[in-house]
Image 1 (cartoon, rainbow, N blue to C red):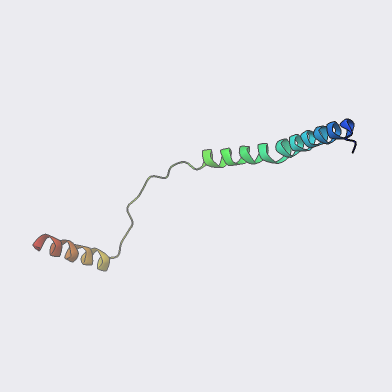
Image 2 (spheres, rainbow, N blue to C red; image 1 turned 90 degrees about the horizontal axis):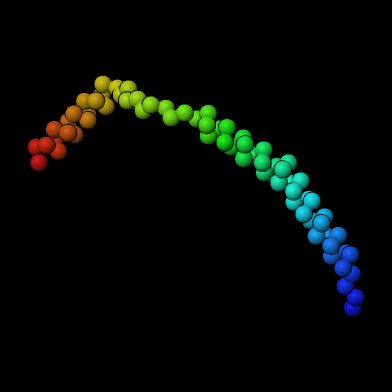
Amino acid sequence: MVLGYGNVINALITFILIAAVVYFAFVVPMNKIAELRARSKAPVPAKEEEVSEEVALLREIRDALVRSK
């Protein structure tokens, strides 16, 4: 069995070139897009939820029951 060194070197060079093209054509732009998305998502200040009067009343009753125990 004869192993052609030229074929092995050719396959290795082809693999490296295709891997480089895939990396620079897909991975690098996707990382850049992810970075821009993360940078654009500024932390939103937490605001209190507006609750209905019934919910507020139920919370007050719950808190009063907890305190009375």
